Length: 332
Image (cartoon, rainbow, N blue to C red; front, side):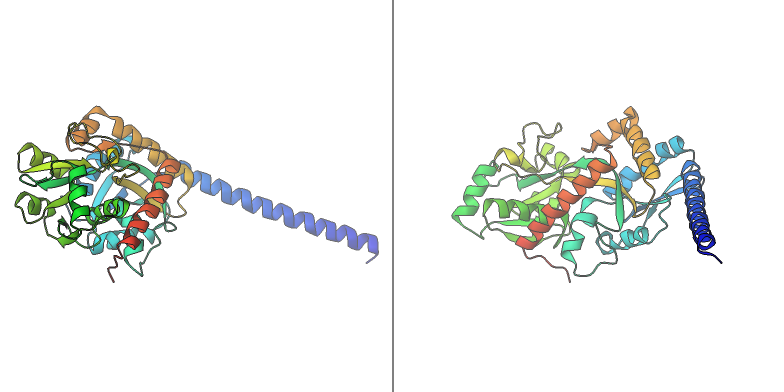
């Protein structure tokens, strides 16, 4: 074969290879678009990594029926509780990235567990793609009704005067209300004794604990019933349901320890599906009948974008990690 013919043959072969690759890419792209455009065409699953009746279970079951109406497919809520949410999170991390299996956790599953356990079957930041925060809520720093300090400033003064004399209750080592209390101690340079209780709210009401961080949904009725008093809330602003209880940040600038529920999908889930899930969930959270029920429970409906939620996840992951390391908390 002459040199000109060889060059022509090589050029033709190269062009054919490029055209074949382009055709394959277009076919794959078209297939992916068709799959995304056809989503959903079967039931979705919300995996709640806690037992039935828990706070995330309750809110997931409020959202799911309305989201089902919007998507035209059933949205099933499945409880896969155990191991601080790890069992449910692992299931979703290994599920197909097709938008049909979603994780509905509280923030500790994503933001705390990676720092508390030396080995996890999932990576909090790499195994999931954030879809949307559904609700936000805070803890209330409760004290027993006859506690000497009537506000946070007085409490901190007592703690500084006699380090280690006061105690605080929590739901257990590494639990959300343990970590947010450790954040406060770290930021204020104070020391108190941690006492785990099965029911940290009751431990304050009965006087077994001096103080405890308690979810707002539980704290509000205890304060209104006169069994406890509120010294501060962990949100950056006061709660509408407790307007007389200041935000802790009013006394400790920069302190904020929100707790949230949200939707996360397996890593690799196509962004068009993630964005549609976020948009439809946000619409559900704006429905008056859903919004009012959530707010009655002391929960703030959110419905943010995937990018906004991803930024919150990253910030909380770093913040919780810092508090856990400062308190030297390890669960294995």
